[in-house]
Length: 131
Image 1 (cartoon, one colour):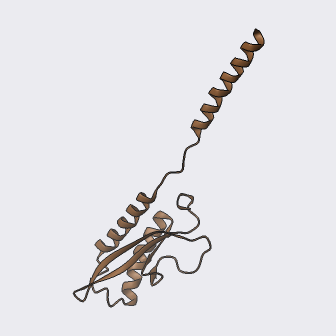
Image 2 (cartoon, rainbow, N blue to C red; image 1 turned 90 degrees about the vertical axis):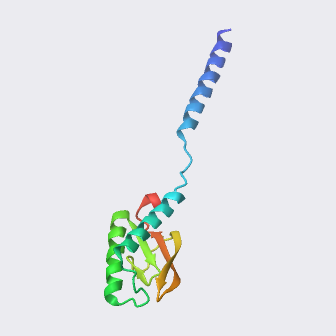
Image 3 (cartoon, one colour; image 1 turned 90 degrees about the horizontal axis):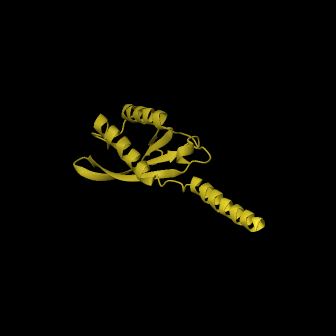
């Protein structure tokens, strides 16, 4: 009788321990909404700064001004920002492990006509939250 009680107690203990251990595992969070929100916030910062008026004529000083803002955003977030591919970016040069995590298609008014531009964010391979 004691053997049966010991076996049942051990099985009950195993069931409780396995249920407790399985509750510690959590599925990875889907942070795609946060990534999109971060990209939209970065776009708004650039847009509000006012560097996009007369965007059709991107001079070196205007590009430097936009890249300075992108550099500030990149230092704060640990991410790379690209405007129209590598035309304007804060991360020049190829780095291994970089992947685009968000791509936005935004509209700018140039010469009284709308033009679609691509604003994208990629990881630098250093921020584990975005790898």
